[in-house]
Image (tube, rainbow, N blue to C red):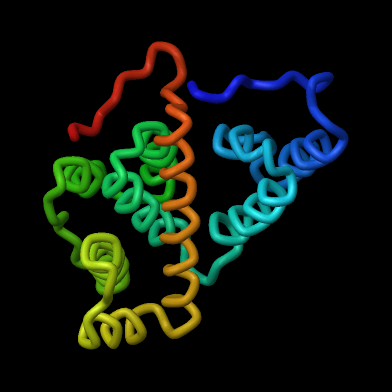
Length: 182
């Protein structure tokens, strides 16, 4: 890890407030990316609020949010993010075969129109940095305009998360093995 974890006594009052707010929030903990962001408490605070919204409060059900997060974690080969959200994805009802296909960078078998729209939209935006009109229209049809905006928010936030985890070399918990190949 490229950042030294701080104990409570080493933190400034602003850093302590950010950590306390994260613990008091819906996550109930200060996740690893937040700990890296503490060098900028204002950014950490704002990112934490956005993260809480895109993770727990969008119009997209957890199975669709988690699908988008997995596509993002795979795109960035973010091992910690994959580790954390693979479990959440299974809890949200995403089939193991879908998760395994994403891990192998293969298109999963998705019969549900909403899940297919999330997967295709997420892949297109990550890989080409654009969304063709036909795919945009398909996503709006499946998710609504609010859902598309919130999907972009999920993809952007989890790109920030993945970039932070990768840059600060935040590894897996002891005893866990990476599942993603380069």
